[in-house]
Image (cartoon, rainbow, N blue to C red; front, top):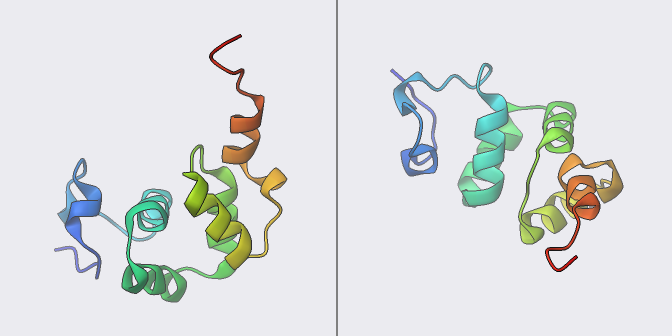
Length: 96
């Protein structure tokens, strides 16, 4: 049985009982960063080392602007190193 100290509502599309912190770390990190609360964020910091968090954040395909600003500031990252930022910048505007 899953004992993750996070709200299962964050994983509405997943079998919460089968979430494994190591196997599903990318999903867990992404959901907690974008939808989680402070207690869940502290869980991330206590569960994964900074290198793991930063590597995962760099690979995420999308972060909303607020979360992007937060992780750049909190982890002292260059937004140009983040896949989600590069992807957003390279997307053509809809009006072209």
